[in-house]
Image (cartoon, rainbow, N blue to C red; front, top):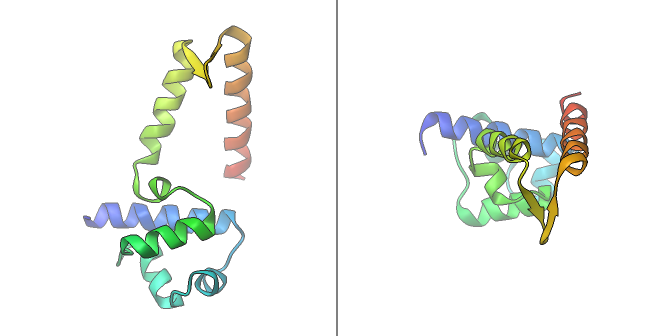
Length: 115
C-alpha cells in the first residue's frame, strides 16, 4: 500500500471511529490493540494486518471495504446510478418520484454526516 493509500485508510478509520463517538483509547480497549498502533494507523504510517482490519471494522460496525476501498468513487457511482433512472432494490424497480425521494434522503444523510 503506497503512502497516499495509507493516509486515505487512516482518514477513513478516524472518520469511522469518530462516527461511533469513540476515542482512540476506547477503540484500543474494544479491539485489544495498543493506542499507539491505532494512532499509527490513523496517521497513515502503518496498516493493520487482515485480522486486525476485520476486528477494527467489526468494532466500528463498518465493512472492511469502507476502510480500504476508494469510497469517493463508490459515492460518485451511486449518484450516477440514481441519475440514470434505472434502479432496482430487492427485485423492485424504482422510478420517478421514488428515485427523487431516495436521492433526497441520501443527501439529507450526507449533510448530517458533514455537520
